[in-house]
Length: 150
Length: 150
DNA sequence: CCGTATCCATTCCGATACTG
DNA sequence: CAGTATCGGAATGGATACGG
View 1 (tube, each protein chain N blue to C red):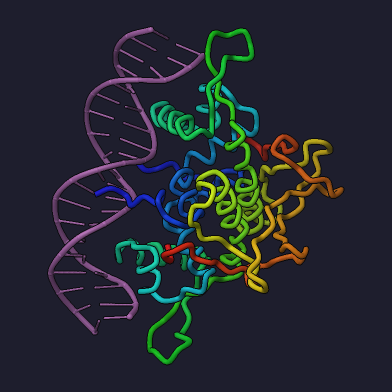
View 2: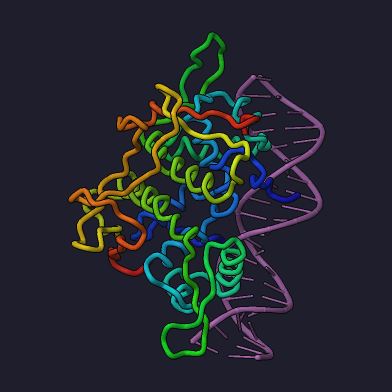
């Protein structure tokens, strides 16, 4: 039996998780956002085996999150760059990072973080806004099912 | 060999993914945010087997994302409610939902969505802000490593 | 109704060896 | 350097049966 797939679920969260909800893919995207482009760089940064890195990159390309381009430096090899669709995953990564930073690290534990490139200042915590500008907390949000509850 | 664990990584994204980066847990949190509390309700909503639901709930409780309380209705059974730590996962879910909604659904395909509870209006797209108030896009963000690149 | 225990198929992950 | 091929072990996921 296979894992149940969510790609025909009416819930966009479920459908997203079906694509990127595994342990490696979002880390690959994280590194790609950080400017990593080459196979060996991914491998070194992630510490993943080559075969699984290869397969993940392949599916990411197939899904239109990464695309393969010619190497920017002289070398004859390809490189992997994010598409627009892939770049737009960054709020998810930042949200994960902020949550992890808050709940999974000790006070002054060494910890990488995403910052404003311009001045290297930390990014403001994510806030969700309503149409009228109110800030929305967890209790202010409700889920309207598309059809079924799933 | 086991999966490599990221819980001692210096990257908060990796550490978060180590906890919640699997296919079921975030969906459980999604349902919990939607007000689901009982075992059978989770099971019906998720369509997951009882044993795997049971194990996921157990680890979520162990991690302090859910906690077990007495049933609010008359019944003698327990129920699972989100802790603060668990509730604060909602930006991640919303980010996933917004991304999925934009890139994984056809124009007018039926699709569940999270809305402002007060007036059932859609939530504004997530924007990241710098300390000085600028809106930050994917290119405006940089990752500063804690120690190693991982 | 709320889970736990067991079983089996599938998948995943990591190491290694190999090709161009 | 950039992958592919293969292999064994581990964990996962699902169905079912069982106990409180």
